[in-house]
Image (spheres, rainbow, N blue to C red):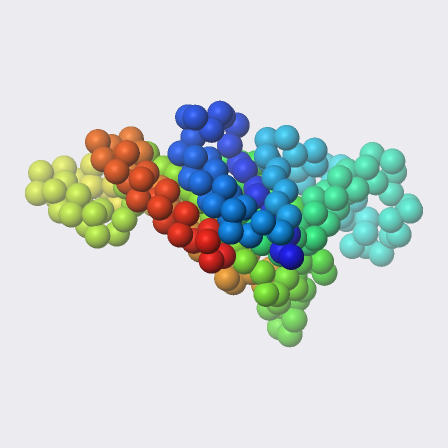
Length: 230
């Protein structure tokens, strides 16, 4: 039996969220084809764990200086305890399904906070020779379902860029060239550092375009097919 952790980074209702709609298709199909697996879901907007704030940073500093955990003050112990609970939950699962929108070329800040917590030295990765990180979470899988209003397919973007270039609009061309999906590589790289290299990305693009429904249907089918064998 596998344990699947579904990680939602979206504050809104599923009826308005394309990433959550594709996620539901994936989870429903997965449940049908893997009935004995355990599925747990968290929404990162409800996560009860602090950022690396002044309290957490001070606690890290004390521990790295050789102090024992018992020497921390109560506020520091509580803060690290909440972060540790998040790490423990992640380690306890062997399959991960992330779902998030693409906002301003990346993803919601709560997902970055979560990645910062779970990417924990000596727990999900270690430093090997020459300081190179080595993942400790081997033989695990991850999927990132991401939705966007724009189009980020390289071939389609190449065509659009040529159209802009033909208009001789250098200022628009410069802005267009800086656009990109900068969030997805962060998710992929963070998982890889922890040893999770069996990774797939379902990108639900063009949801603000005229062909949004067509693209969504294709991605729903992609999620369904993947869930059957994952």
